[in-house]
Length: 152
Image (tube, rainbow, N blue to C red):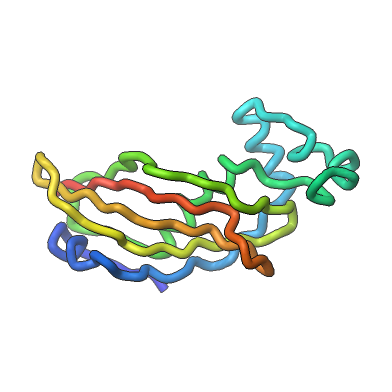
């Protein structure tokens, strides 16, 4: 279920809140190959299904940065911010990839709002904790603290 907020005051009210979990997204070999082509990262553990069968993960896996990039569409399922003139991804404070995502596996995003503080230019800065969960695994694929800014 998407949470919708309107304006900076409603964004501030999210502080400490759990934004829930997105729907599941299957990681396909086609998506991994497209990412490999876009980034130039053609390491065999990502794109060579035959060789990867005998590798450490028993098959091909998603790039860590592919998993991280999928936070964007998954986060859009959780939060809809209206009543602002601009929103920007300000960066990441910490990112880890504790567990691989095997091709054919499914991921979803869990998010919580750590804090919301005012910033210059009539804006707010949100710190969010993101956890990319892997269906059937106790370990997440990615944990990250993200920084977003929203301006009125």
